[in-house]
Image (cartoon, rainbow, N blue to C red):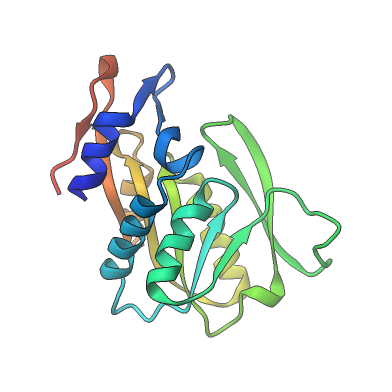
Length: 191
């Protein structure tokens, strides 16, 4: 998505440790119109996939998941990083590693929200090493639902998470794939 690449070049900042800061529009302050545009693009990419629900992980994935779900007119379910008192005891759970935060989370989804017969699309803001997506695919598997694939706003292609998932036969669509961020210069993969 050329508009996303342009926005990353204009507003993104490369931080130490191969961190891309896009807080001005995606995961701190939200450019809602642009997020809805990204959501429409995800909906276009998966329009013939029979998706019945979107699954994401809190917190930064929620905005783009809502954009895609609004365009597809389907619900969003988000995995919670903490089991709170308002979550029943009957949950699917898995451990995911956050590259950005450098920590593991046990994420949960109540069993009421994912069912056998659902066709789930995973949507997230970033794809780096693929651990978060792998955890969400594990939750889909536990539920007996099918997986339509995954859509991410920004993929750090140099971390190979997306390539690994694709090699496993999983459909992964990223709106922008970054091949390198050396010396603060962002290089996108030709799509």
